[in-house]
Length: 132
Image (cartoon, rainbow, N blue to C red; front, side, top):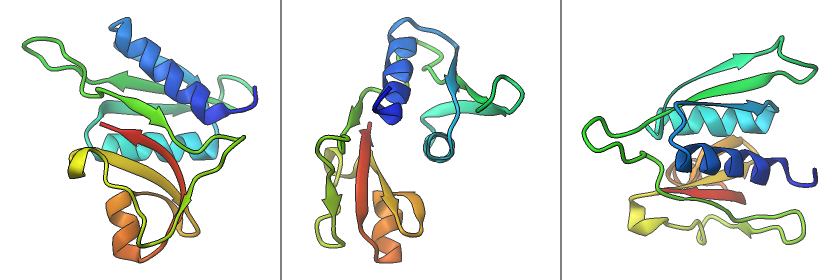
């Protein structure tokens, strides 16, 4: 597998389309940070990191749906920076997703943060993905 973050996003996308309640994904440090951000921003219900699943562990993510009509909280997950074409942004070029309604997840020198947190910390970095 050449792009584990794209695999992570694709597993989430597929689970949402199939209306699954829980999805299990192989763990890595960056995937744990992305999952933490998704939980903080209210895109997923909860997550649990299982270290004993295999060598690298796994992340179990409980997906969030609207109680009345069953629409998912995550409408779109888009990978921006790919292994073949990395996308970096400075402080001035930090992207706004859906005019501020979505989030951009950025890997900075101070950790994996959202676009708003990166502006507050005055740092740029690699734009990993857009979520809305």
